[in-house]
Length: 244
Image 1 (tube, rainbow, N blue to C red):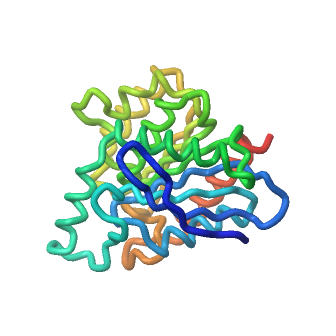
Image 2: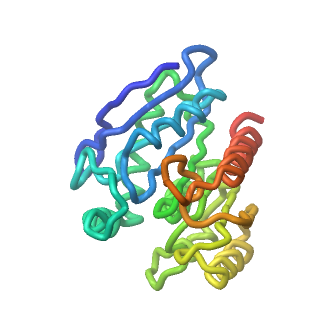
């Protein structure tokens, strides 16, 4: 495997990013890995390595780069989570669309990347962000996945549910059984918007899980059966849309 960190230029500054891909057999289809609110950290790098090990060039940008190059939540205490929420609320769909444009320019020039085949995956706060990226670049992004996504229905003009008609990518949405950020009525409204927007999608509930079930280091929340199903569904989505 080949991996490195690099600064990707954006209109708002240098976005420090982690890149990993197989050593041989390239160029490889690209996966844009959008982080959750807990920040840019080794746990996510390990997840990127797992994706790369089956044949993808994976990019993990630090979406908080405008304010911090190295934030990650070390303790889930109310005091420690204050700066996390401040950073999370500093993001916007427009800003992430600009960041995605920078990522696309980067992979266009990266020999190991096959930039004709691009997918994206997001978790928690980045569920809305992959919808925004796919809506901003419908001709570039072939597939997206959103796992235990938060804030998918809002009053904002750029709410994810209002972007569905602009998305051409095939979508997979995974919902935790217990999730205050995505209760059943919110998920139902999102599915209606995806259906009415003409999206190709699959929405699936994960029994026995709660918000954050994917992350191995999320003690008391990680749900191994659901996390492994997440990998199965993600591999299948990208194999179908980026390889065939």
